[in-house]
Length: 155
Image (cartoon, rainbow, N blue to C red; front, top):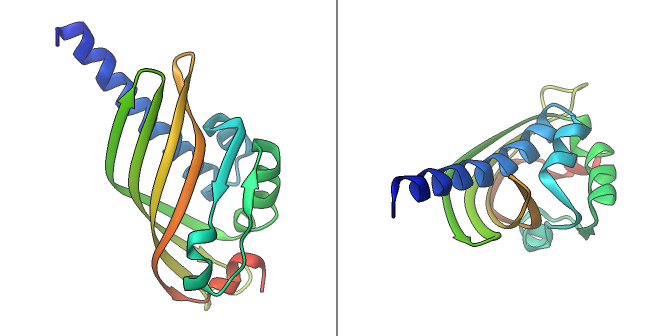
C-alpha cells in the first residue's frame, strides 16, 4: 500500500468505529441527532439472540425512525453508559463488518439502587454514505449480565 492508501484505510477504520460510538453515545446522552447520524434509514437492530439469557422478548427493530422511537421510549430514559472495546474491522469497498465487545450499564433515574450491567458482543454491518459510515445491521449478542434486565423495559 502506498501512503495515501494507508491514510484512506485508517480514516475508514476510524469512521467505521465512530458509527458505533455515535450509536452508544446517542443512547447515553439521549441524543436523537447522534442516533440518526449512526444508522441507515433501513437499519436493523436485532437483540433477539439475548432474549433467552435476559428473560425478555425484544423484537427485531427495522428502520431508523422506529429504532430511534423504541430506544427513546426505553433505554434512553435510563441512566446509561456504553463502553466499547476489542474492535475488529473488515472493509470491502463500500461495506464493512465491525465486531466489538460492549459493556452497558443501565440504571433507573428514580431508583439508583437497581441496575442491569450487560456484556454483549456486537456484530455490525455498515455501509459507506459519502465520507461517513452508517450501521445497516446490528446484532446484539448477550454474553452475561448482572442485575435486573427488566429495567430495560421499564419494570
